[in-house]
Length: 330
Picture 1: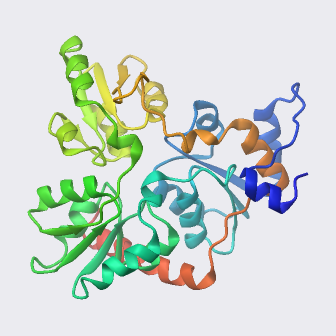
Picture 2: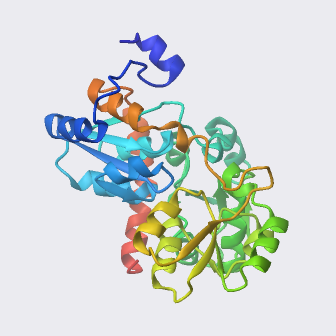
């Protein structure tokens, strides 16, 4: 087994696996043995989604895990999601198959720089999108998701001064929907930033009956073309409830697996990015593999920890969001 130093350098347990092993079967055995549950974000590869106990958006997964009696949470997602699981379940052990499964959006907002930014606006309250580090949550007043961001902002008095971070595209969309003047941190998710408006236009011409659906982390020019804008869960629900038979999907292509499972009679086309690829994969999400997941649960490593003081401070804005959501009946 690798030393801790090697583990941190590589990001994952690097062991040879017997090629004859049925990994699905072995993972099921280990889950029972260790009283573990597997959470998989919608952007994970299909094999991981298929073996997970819960599949969903980042915060929803952490909330589900907190309700269970599991001792171990294996989060097949990215680093900030595993941190959120630890914040909501500090007594449970939280594992991440690959520590280097980071997030371009979370990385675009270093907490020490955000703290200085926040100091420039002392009379503003801070709303941060849940896709950020535990440290950033600890600097916030309220956390929001892409599902409830608009309602959270609207729940505050009209004269409330607000800093919104770290996603400028989501922030701009929320400002437009609410008519509020938000101070935006200049961060973005690389997956949602690189959709090509030109290629999507051509795709729409080839599929005139297709509904174009997009995540609010996309740029405004792309959102203007959309028939529906919503969170990953929102997009999935829309495709299930819509009468349309074809959809062009502008978010990470991993969600298409769930869309196809829910609606085998419908066609889903990933929106193309402005590079040579046909669909838009998050390189961080795809660092997790079935092999790494198996080795992670088998060895109980790599583990994600959050300092106790950060857990206390980061829980507050999440609880504030849950209070507001409950009062609004969300």
